[in-house]
Length: 158
Image (tube, rainbow, N blue to C red; front, side, top):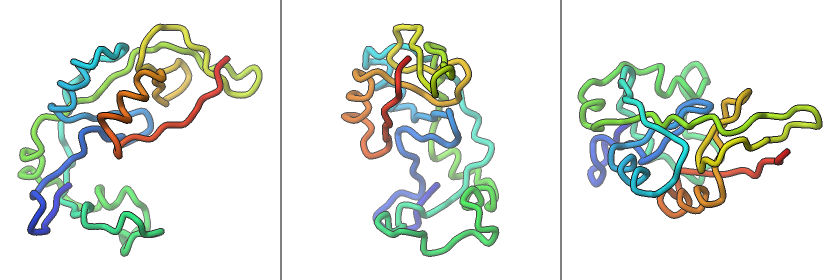
């Protein structure tokens, strides 16, 4: 996670990232914003940076249909996994945290896949699912404070 272009820092991580299904990672500064937001339903855990790489992804053409080059394996995760850990870049990123949503819903599969909300949290997970869910209030907050790093899809409620 870094850049070698002359006008960009040698390291960068967006304020919020989703490195795997259900995983949410935030920077220290974004954690402070979330803590002050009034949103509910989550805690934070420390993140141990075991595999951080220098990758000049900010210079990639974001409008292109495909990347200019692919890893030799053809697997997108190998942009990261195919490179060695860079402790200098990991240190330069500063503290990162895992945002851990509370359980506040259940996935009901009796008539398709529907979310039954069981809590009053703004950010939550549902039993039986790895996805994260947010209320309209949280969606609006994230759209204001984390665009363009977030995207949302509607969910069918039970």
